[in-house]
Image (cartoon, rainbow, N blue to C red; front, side, top):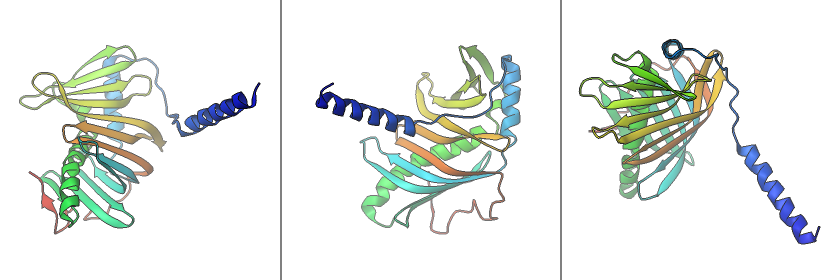
Length: 247
């Protein structure tokens, strides 16, 4: 083997090893085959185990034009209707997002140029937070929910009155929701929330990577610290006094 080929082979091995190191292998419980109704009942039982949650990690906000910003982030949730996201860069607060049944509030930077960028991305983050919290807190108990088996997936579909249709893809082997899609009247997905990198916390399995895509851009959240059912501060979901309510 020539020296050049040895070098190339060494580079290939190093790259392959690096790729494997970055890959994520889920180590979570699996379930025997069961009918769709039993699967839905199991999903309902799992959702009811989560009362509160907090975590820390990274959030990446990407606008439709491709501009992005990556921030340190902390989050708290109380399904089905309360969530809080805070993000900062180099110790400086960038935005603070609060979701409650009464609405969505956001605190953005004072800098005018950065303010509009974060506010626009914050709308997508708000949609992620609100959708995730609501769906995690009772989607599988929704009236009119229908489901079908499709290969290794359970496809659950919620259609209720004038509300948008929501479709959830569930991995049958692990009984974990993998993707929610909010459809318009023509059946086109206007918002998707993909979940992965599930980890086990006691008897609860929870995703640590979420990617939300909408017309307003893309939001990716990667959590490296998660607490399930912690005691949250009494004012955890009270918007700061200078927060702006989003329309």
